Amino acid sequence: MSDTDEIERKRPNILVTGTPGTGKTVTASLIAEKSGLRHVNVGELIQQHKCYEGHDSTLDTHILDEEKLLDLMETIFQECAEENTGIVADYHSCELFPERWFDLVLVLRANTDVLFDRLTERGYNEKKRSENLEAEIMQVVLDEARESYALEIVQEVPSNTVEELESNAERCQVWVEQWVANNS
Image (tube, rainbow, N blue to C red; front, side, top):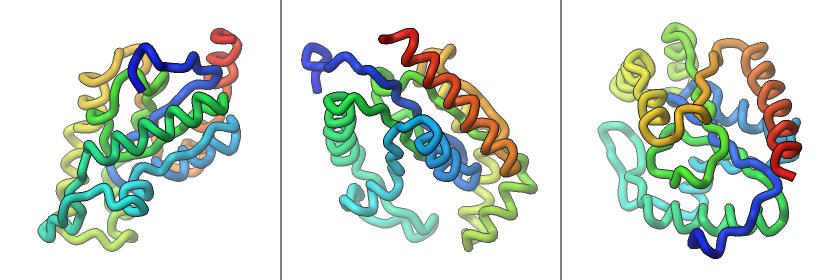
């Protein structure tokens, strides 16, 4: 979709990002449910459409084929715009997505003790868990979001408890309603 072909959107697009284990998928699902946006779990999309070029056995993860993923997502964004549906996407990285895709970037943050327990529960090996904890401590995803998007659309929110996840979703619902009112 080139800039000249872009359809004027009637609903916003939100990116929920953060270190693995911060609650992105749960938060994005809640936002989609409350706001009527389409939830796009980018990790699942990568798996379903095999948007990877190989496997990193050290970190026990796939090596992303960014071009294939972005082409696929471009189609999804176009379809949603044509259907007057907004998107709430969740992924642990944000720098690869075009800035024009999102109106709000929600960066979830979690305390390291909470994150450690969540990653352990997922069965992450020691190296993968340590790298993710270090990324959270060094606020890698937050810095990446601030470098990749306009500062006014990047929001850092806590994501340690169910109550915080629900509160974040409710705040997004209010934001979506205001965005729609401002852009109709």
